[in-house]
Length: 185
Image (cartoon, rainbow, N blue to C red; front, side):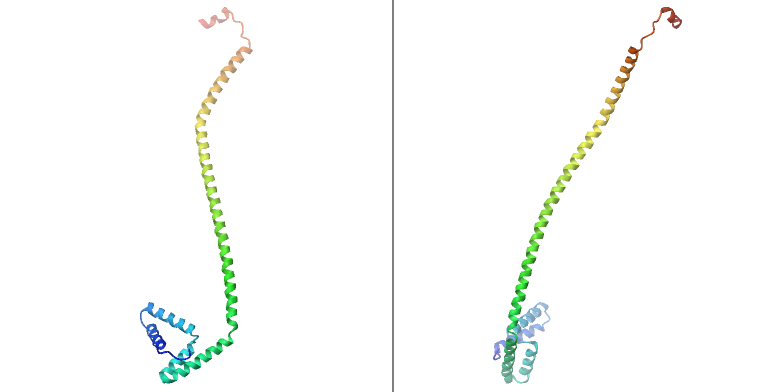
């Protein structure tokens, strides 16, 4: 920025006017544009303030003040030649960190998918077991009356067979007709 371009000065004044507007969207955008221009031209806030004070006091001195500001800016750039290297190192570290985080995220996503599939299989097995258990319980309920009936029938048959066996094993007493006559009268 060796000389102040009248067009740039007009743009800068328009931007400043928009910054002071009451419309929040326009003033925010204008303020961001002002910051971007200052960064692009390596202009600090103090240098911009001095520039405006010089322009306000004497517009012809503005050109020499702008030259001095650009000379100071180039001197500060010379001092900070190692800054781009430092920024590159930081950028490389950040890129490595992003790559590492991306890899970790992918691993977490794959583990999540694996766990989801295991959960689905477990839920499916649980449903099958519940169905099987319900079937077993219903079949057990149906067998209880049948089992009771069979047990009664078997008990009755065993009792009759046991009494017949007892009669067969013990010989019957020999009865005479005279012995049973007292039952007839």
